Image (cartoon, rainbow, N blue to C red; front, side):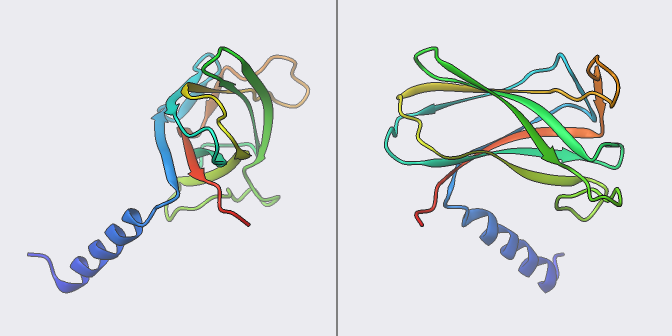
Length: 163
């Protein structure tokens, strides 16, 4: 039987989750603790609103097996008309001490990383965002085949808040 504390905690969690009024899209894909360079993570979503602006975030879950202080990604947005935009992105993942950045109570940390700020999806239809890691070790020309310590890659789209 549930006690009062468990019921209150469950209600608080439900309240926080249900009040996410800015969320438009939020999806994760597992890479099973090791993101392979050839594994391009793809998200698809449909937009009909061609006027409002949105913020797009890349969410990365990693654990203590992640041994780098940064993360390089290649991001590509494919528009409904076939046009695409490709970006090379760099994110800080650890403090100089080696302590991983992000939120979380266990060895799994979650990082909400800016991808596009105040973007307007000005075409109605199906969009695709593809993400691929582009990590390499210092002094090595070849990229890493396997990026250990990454467990999940996510994409989140939120309504941009007017300033």
